[in-house]
Amino acid sequence: MSSDETTAPAAGPGDGPEDSPFRHERTARDEAPQFVLPLVARIERAGPPARTDALETAARAVLVLLGDERSLGDGVWAQAVRDWQDARIRKVVRRARGAEWRRAEALEGITVTGGTAEVRVFPPVPLDGWPKDLARLQVSGTDLDDPEPPAAPGPGTPVLWLSPDLEMSAGKAMAQAGHGAQLAWWELSDRDRAEWRGAGYPLAVRTAAPERWARLVASGLPLVRDAGFTEIAPGSCTVVADHPALRRVAS
Image (cartoon, rainbow, N blue to C red; front, side, top):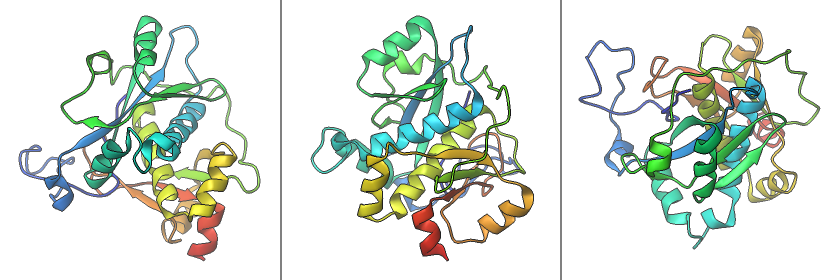
């Protein structure tokens, strides 16, 4: 599972050949020290999580960290979160099982549980300063499936709509869903954030039908554009965050 993403086209020289599909343009945000938000998904051989549940759990994990008192004000994680958000909004999803997962759980962070998925999110770390028990975890090598198609989201549920035009690994899609949730969080009022947090951050992740996707991209709702570090071309639109409170504003 892999992902090293940002929420807008980014960055610069030395990233690969000039004709590389993953080349990106440098902006001022690349001049700041770069941090990354680590997420670790528990994927046991005998019982891997369903793909959609893993995506939703990862998105909620990002929100849980952003809304945690340790990430706000003078909290112990607040400076790291600010430094991370001042640069590229990178998230990396790694996988763990057995003893690897137990070592990850021993590190400072928050575990978020879905129906079949467990994802642990950690405070941001420097791009080259991962804790060794996280740095040794695999980024690639496992993909996930849904045993049956996910049901339609319930009325009033915030939905992170994935592009129907892109093929993404589970890890990349988890990071992209996290980006969409974060953009929605930024756009909400304090009252709407408090209500979402109080409800436990309900959300759904679904792939949009092509005709719906075209409308969503043009809707004014928060839109994730990939930086092109991995898997897909820079500038690709990956996720639209369709929160009911934001829909009222966008309309």
